[in-house]
Image (cartoon, rainbow, N blue to C red; front, side, top):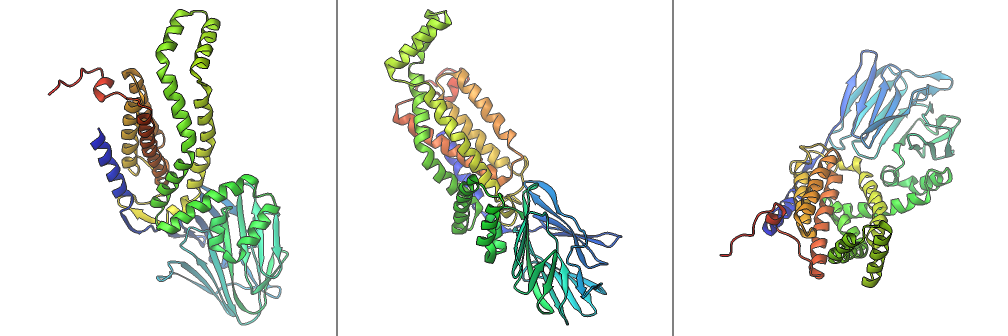
Length: 443
């Protein structure tokens, strides 16, 4: 069994860190009514080709698609004085160097270009070049907003929790209209979920200002800052290693080391309870009255200096931590789609049985081996093995990035359990004992 576990661990490492090209997915569609739709892995944006305006914006977060902006004469409509300018032609192409998608509208007096970046950061840019100063209406997603007339405009949407921020040094903002200081310039736009790492990548100039304003409008809580600290740490590991696979494994390892004292207490409590199990069974047979049985058990616990609640208490402390860690890794699901792919996993942001089959296999094997380490009889081991078989299939739809965390955590739990059990001199059972087979004959 030991050789098999080592082989599986080596296979796990090889598959995780064999990377290929970057993921790519950007599609376009032009409808008969003149609506042009562009879909990336993070959002869906539609344009009216006749008016030359941005229509609707849908963001794709956690495998759901939510509308955050619907057109209402506010899609960067261009005005010269009180007259709205209508484009005479349009051009679409993909910039081979940057990977961005370009949608350019040509007017009699100039041009307006939408640059949709092929990044996970929910950002795009509006570039304009006219022979005279112009004004444009711009979208915002709610009345909860803050702005600096000379540089940016921010609006916050509570459901779905989203943010739209526009930034430019070339315009002034007032009453839903931006006025160009000259005839040319550019406007950077972030339209996505409230994820500070993404905002810092899309609009580094505004990061501190946006963070402060989000806090003032109640979009950030005390918990948000704790969560963000863990997010920053995982992102640091990604920058350090250049791979989300490595980053998630190192992240899981560090967290496990930090939580080891709690796990050690929990396991020690389970071992102590296991040692006195024969005495507990004797008391249960001796006292049929529940009250007397409970009194005898409490006396036994006091005599052995055991607190039966210790194991449960430490487990309850760990559970919210692991829920937070789960959300931290899920935070980067959009970046998974753009990070380097792994050997036969097309995308760390997607899931499914075939996608996660190797990780399911690893989780099952580690679970089975863990059952033989921690059990003292075949019945208990078989029950644990059934749970080990069922649980990975409950999670098979998770994004592969999350399943890497789950599988890595399973391996670390197995290794830590083996260490603790050996430290306290506890022996498990063999696979032959699990299935009630006689021992191998001595050679």
